[in-house]
Length: 361
Ligand code: PMP
Image (cartoon, rainbow, N blue to C red; front, side, top):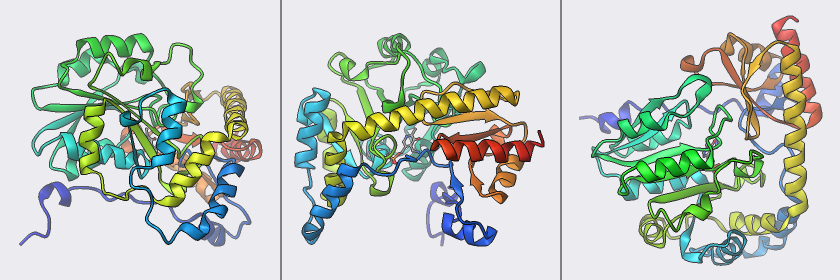
């Protein structure tokens, strides 16, 4: 007898890269440069660090199941009611909660390709599936095609904006037009994991749209600009009714105490966030220039990573790895590309130096 259903047996397990320390040991180098997972190169905010230390002695207690203080603070910052917020162990858990709560076996979710593969993995694990809609040239989202792909069994449309792995975005007007044309029993989930890095003026002001479109949900995370990836904490903003449903499915103590404490402190550390965003902006300009000099096509990014066409992504990825620089290869469907996270200035420089060696220019 089979141990699990076909939907589970056919899943491809997430394969994490080798631990960085292991790679350093194998290569006999002092420090590898990791630009693979869109993490924050500036570490965690000093205020988060202080807060964590001062709460060490309380870690024998269960965390606040409703993230009481963090919720209050974030609601105030966003200008939304507290009952429009729910926290999870990263936006990954939010994606899972949305699918477990709203999508029944046999129903489907829709997203565009290429985008965040986790939507499809979680859908499949829950007896559902993701219909991936091809993007146009330069990875432009084709909303017309998305509307045509939605069927009577579609429950959620996931729209990463800025998108991963391309760094591209769609505008406020495009979003509003889509919301006006999509059936209102289809949930539209904006995945704004990279929200804090955006500088495009026509980027959606999504929170302002919540009152008009009760089928809209917005996911954000503390993993990127706030530098708290290791703590696993993210959140979703939505209608009180929708949040109430998610809250019924959520495990009572899903977000651990340390994560709540550091996230709360991070929201206060404006100075750190400002530095992170500046580092990202400067790094982006530097890398654009270097890619131009090398004649490499890249995609302008609104996030903290850049997609670059290097012709043979797998080879360049492996050659860079051998030189102690870890970037991301995105699989055979995106074979010409690598995705590189924007690092500290010295990390970006080493990446470019090694890339030149690999490309023999
Ligand atoms: N959405 C997108 C588009 C992402 O790129 C990521 C991180 N790779 C996530 C969600 C998940 O982030 P986390 O679970 O760390 O909040």
